[in-house]
Image (cartoon, rainbow, N blue to C red; front, side, top):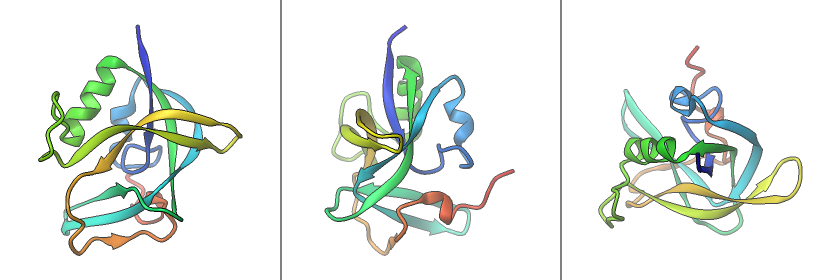
Length: 135
């Protein structure tokens, strides 16, 4: 079974409201990625993170190894088409992650592919600073 590295920075992280989607994934550790994290707040029941490439900031997340099937499931969850489409909400791209324990790892990450509008910057770069614990 082929496995891919993914970097998750929002609701898919441990403690995040959608972490259950990572069932069967192998946790590799914490890390950071160059970029900025924004809160997209569509209404009181629908808010989610958006990672954009931005110099001078970093985003906190976790690295996992996932089977190809899980990667495809995560693409569907993130609204990524099987064939990249510029209208998709997110784009999945390979980026370098700095690991907390040292070293770097190349991993898939989902970047926001829309206008930020009135999105709010999450200064800490850590989604779990603002998402309530679902338990």
